[in-house]
Image (cartoon, rainbow, N blue to C red):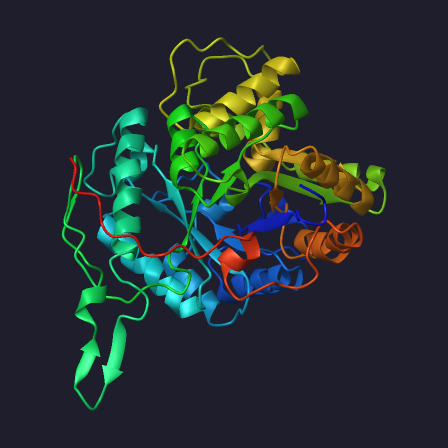
Length: 442
């Protein structure tokens, strides 16, 4: 595929206090994730930068040892509905767990957001792994692979509910009194292993046909769900080109096996760019942010990302050999452990990396150097774009949009204007036709 045909996609991962754990301490940085003006400001910057996606994660538990933005946050669907009223182009994506919700409610919520925003909704499908969150829902937290089996059926039910309506089913005819063409609306009648759902939704078909589905699972079950159902994949990389290329090619091959076109499932790694007028200045900014980290929550934070309890291990010792398979998020665990062993890190080194961007890739340098890295990975097909994770808002995000985006545009790698009104337009995805329900098998 020629460079003129293929262009980079960009999303922004939004934590109001910044993606760096200490980003909020920078002078002028936002210090809240629970502020409408803060979120409106970030969305405005993203639209100015012609970003595909404004993306917020979610969790249903407050952990005092976690990132500041995780202690005080909006319910994501409520927030995105509000932002849909003050934005025009940016895609609006949110994490909603298949572990603590019902397919009908999720289908209805994202269909509503798609209508309210004119076709810009995206659902990040996750399977929750935090046992403390389960305590808030009177739920049992199942083992890793079973959670993905549930999620696979959950996604099928949601998509089936979105397809219960054909386009043009509402035909308000005052002369005849006909409001709806009944032949264009049908029940789902799903009877499965985990869910029994009658349907249909009490809402006409979405502007996008179906809202965009995002997936970020890195384990084999997560990759299979991505290849089968995702429209966009948010991946975890550690900066190693070889492993990133292998993961990229592996997922694209899975996509093909499911009868889908590989370019219809763009892969966007998360990356935190630290930008300066010189490489040295950018490194000084990163060092300053890192100097504000403390070891007080090292055990909690690293244990959460690795999925193993590291209490009792020396922080300045080598990375232990963990025998058992983690039941937490395996993408982060595998990526971090691979990087740590390759670079002979200690647990303290791993803590510093994890506290910076929670395990995502951190790069620093001039706008040209950041653009060079993005172009290299994009051209080598290790990525189809990136989810940018600014260390703090608004300054670090302004720097990216003001300095890096024009450089990418100058190179012909990135759009100068939006190509259409919907998120599917931004991603180059077609609007799917409604499919007759076929989910009755258990």
